[in-house]
Length: 424
Image (cartoon, one colour):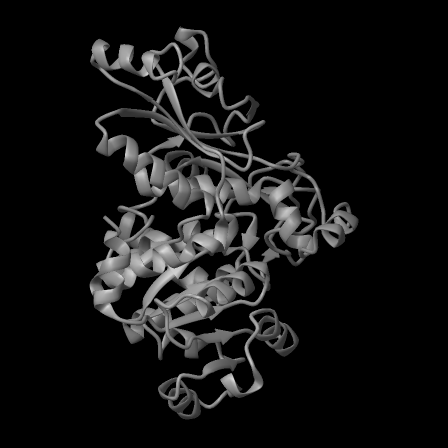
């Protein structure tokens, strides 16, 4: 009982570095500060205004922290149990036990992970955009370095894996894994369309755009695929409307009156957000009858539904699990089995410079790795600043490598090439 807490006490205080001072980074910083399992932490970000705002929100006094971009001064501050604020993101990945990536930026996340691997600092990432793109190779590098590379509890992929592990441990066969979507789906949405909504929600318009256009959901399910071997049943998934009681009935095979071509797939739906789910069954009719007795439905398929995920508020669980137990909450288990490829949101002209995730030009669609390779499609996560269209591209087209000159100076482009060479 209380295994994780007890093991954490045996280990002692964990030094945590957090990169990113948006909603996720700031909320996690507050939780770390108030939790006795953790020692003075490093909070890194490029915006000094949001750094100091996070300190204010966390209720930290002026004499309890320093701001510095000098590594030796930062080390000394940690010895004196002070919190370190810095613009140098690498501090968080070099002088702590674990670094938590809350940036959502594929390029920054890749650079940060590589630094952590070099310094043998454990990695817990809320940067699912990066993980879906180069996570398999970063996991390999982390394994070679003897550190943990992990996604986070509370983020939908981690919450889905929690249910998946539970079901597997209980001996069920898992058929479908998925999540709810709490906003509309409009693949062609732009930051201009969502500017007012973003202001009301207090979030960045590009971040909200990546949610509404579906890219974020594709990345999240992509991470689940790479951790379990599941794949999308159809490109982009089915995306239906359901409710907690009808999940198992709605996500079943066509031959059983449902919508699926096969099992061992991922999908998403309205009507169940902010929850996540698994559809399971048991080969023993006696167990099926017991599930009916337990009011889990009529069977033979049953849904196991978790009605919440608490994003960064659950990340401390993953930090302890990574540092103390040497275990990942969720991570790729090998090469990618699914990919989030780029689709044109509008007609793109030859010579145009691309924006990136959550922008005006492209959105992501989840496909199997086989589809990605056979079509020579481009993962959306490697389209960074400096990428240019090599030819005209029609709206709705899945981009290929013949369509785009990538920014070859980008670190995520370099790592992605190494990943493709290693796994393909």
